[in-house]
Amino acid sequence: MKISVIVPVYNTQDYLRECIDSILNQSLKELELILVDDGSTDNSSDIIFEYVERFPQKVHAICLDNGGQGRARNFGIDIAKGEFLSFIDSDDYLEKDALLELYEAAATADADVAICDMEKRYDDGTKEYVKAALQDDPLASAGSASNKIFRRSAVGDIRFPVGLWYEDFSFSAKMLLKSKGTVFVKKPLYIYRCGQSSTMNNNNARKNLDIIEIMRDIRDFAHAGGYKDGYEFLLINHVLLDSIKRLQVQESEDKKAVIAKLRAYVKESIPRLSECESFKRETGNRRMIMTLNYYGLEALAIAILKIKSRLR
Image 1 (spheres, rainbow, N blue to C red):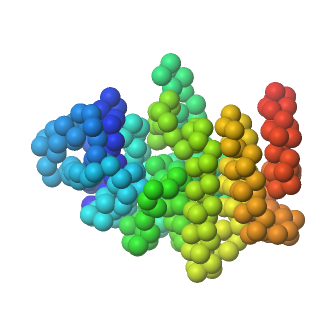
Image 2: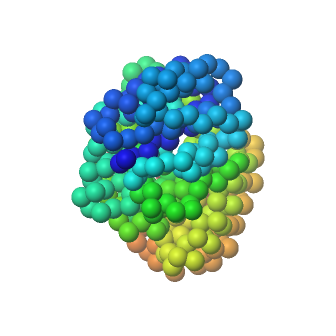
């Protein structure tokens, strides 16, 4: 078995068939599909068992009470038999050659992780190409687990955190830190359906504080494995830059207090930003925005980004 595809399902009856069909119709045939019903209250479970009956050798089902996406994925990991693991969201879908291209890229490079670009598709038919990473460092792509495949033997006992936001980031970051090789397939093979609620577009500012607990866990993992520089890269890019920037444009009344706590955590971990080796390797523009955020000038940082966007 080359790939185990794990799909957590919660109330996505309108999209689930398209997701499942895109997996079963992959050009790579040596795969299994593990559908984890996370306590759905719509007709998702009926759809799941329809496919189990139709494809009993290929499609497997796990039924749980509702416990969140991370927990559902962990149950899938525990029974997966594939050489690689893939995690697909049940309202998204794959291009026909996605898993074949990712698998061949990983096998050719003897890589533990293979990553593809994504395409956002909106209800009005609009499409948007999304690169997996805007930087050469694979750690820049840690945000999502869905556009990647992971070598099962490298995963070991790494699991998704339960009950916290940023579970994708946690799992992907740890895998990318320990990966003996990571390869990119620069094609939009993963189709991300926009319009649903997610961590990235949710306006609940306080839940963003979960990333501090996530980062502390990653810090312990990184220090134990000798990945200190990688941890600092994740901290300045995904907390100091991305999280603060995302919060600053929210309308939540809690955002200032949350940003202050995120900034305090970054300062606790990196007392002198200018001496951080990962910071020194960033481009001038990214260092500027990181510096403004580090010193509490995130409103100015957003204003500068808006001006640069208009001038393009």
